[in-house]
Structures are given as structure tokens and as C-alpha cells.
Length: 320
Ligand code: DGY
Image (cartoon, rainbow, N blue to C red; front, top):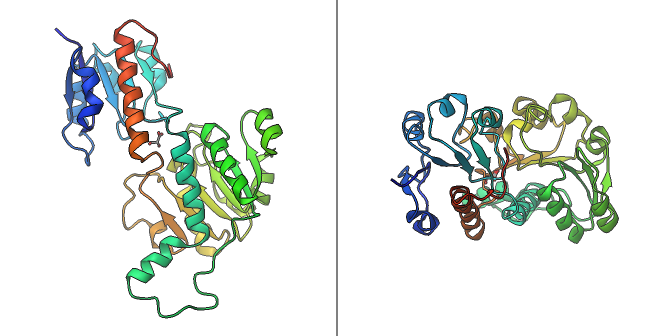
């Protein structure tokens, strides 16, 4: 009997092929819709390995219902969808897919920063709606990126990659992180700053921290009030890092100038969400790592983690 791998989302055939010989591969047959919880619980109960995506909640209830489960391979760098403490207590290994998505996610983050600063979403929507009446002296005027100060909260791999991109725009870079980055400071001139100083001085505040109990609601009313009135907030980490109610008020009242969001507290974000009613919000559907090459590389890492584990090797990118 082959071990059972349950994959929670329909994947391209090439991603699954490496597993076919050694495993019985079962897969949720929809790409656009997440596996219902009841199905996930039923499948997990029979599985030796789970291949999860960020929309799957792997909690103690699921782990308790999965007596044969040995490994959860999460196809993402973030793993806040998994209760790693419960997994560890139950002896289930968890892996993630860092590294391969760094540059792609940094590209998207910088694209979102540019798009928000120069109001690309709003301008394109108006053009398509036939509202472009004429070139106007002050129409669609935004904020300059070149020469501005970039503040990065969470200077991990993706944070550093975003900061490197800003050098092409002659930006000053402030960063806030649990640990200092002496190499990046020496090589690129990035400056460490306490959170409040970063918020006060940055023209662009970019949140790139993992979502943990410590970072939940990290940017709230107090933090937004510290930012410049002309500042722009970019979030491409997890929605919960920013207090959305506070952000809505800040954007509506002119406490800050605009926000670019690739992530939301609830995903998919409801179309009637107050933030989507604001013209100074550029919103994307969580596409940070969404390039063909990167998504295939993430799948490859996930398959390899499962293969390595069942071949008796320590899987790369083990979280617990
Ligand atoms: C991640 O990897 O954590 C992304 O948010 C999903 O692509």
C-alpha cells in the first residue's frame, strides 16, 4: 500500500507527476475554490501527507482527526494557517516554500508601491469607463517615488529584496526588524530605525512581517497617526498585520494619503468592504508570488519535501 498524499487544490499535472510513483495522490478537483472543511477533515483522516495552501486551516481539530498524518507541506512562505505548536505536539512535520518566491514577491510589492503612488488603478478604471475627458494640469497627480524615503517593516528576505529595488529609484531606506542587518546596512546603506521613527519619516511604509500574535494589528490608529499626511502604506504580507478599520478611517480622513493592499483580513475581500469604496486604495487579490515560474518552483519544493521525508531524509524548509 502506497502512502496517501492529499493535495488541497487542483494543480497542474507536472507538479504532481514526481509524486505519482511512490504515493497514492488524491487532490481536490477545483482550482478556484478552496476545499470545504468537511472534505478536508475526511481526507486528512486517511492521509499520510497533506499538501496545503494558505486558505487551508490546519489546526488541532484537523490534526486530531488525522492519525496517520506525518507531514504538512504548505505551499507558501507564510504558515500562519497552520497551528505549528499543535503539529509539533502531535509529531507532525511542517514545511514551507521560502526563497523561490522572494524576487517575484518583491517585484509585486514594488509594482504595487508604484501603482499606488501614481494612481494607476484609479486612472485605468476611469479611462475604461470613458471618463478621460482631456489632459488636465493636476489630473491624476500622485506622489513621487524617486528620491523618497522607503520604510520597511520586516526586513526578511522579501524586505531586503524590496529595499534593493528601491536603490534604482534613489530612495533612502529605513527598516525595522527584530534583528539588525549589518551586511545590508554596510552594502546598501539601509538604516535601522525604531518603529515610530520609521513611521514618522517614511514616505512609503511597507509591511512585510510574518503574521503572528505579535504582529497582529501592528499598524493601527496610533501608528497611522504617526505617518505623514502624504504617506502611502503598502501591505503585501498578511491582512491581519494592519487594522483595516483604522486604515479606512485614516484614508478617509486624510491622516495618510493612500494604501496599496495585496492582502486582506478576510480573503477574498468582500466587494462591499469599506476599503474598496475608497479611490485612494489600490487593491489586488493576494498575487505576490503569482508568476508561472515561481508558482511551479513552489510546487516543486513542496513535492520534494514530501519525497524527502518519505525517503527518510530531513526535508528542506522544515518549520517544526
Ligand atoms: C506566501 O507564500 O506566503 C504567499 O502569501 C502566498 O503566495
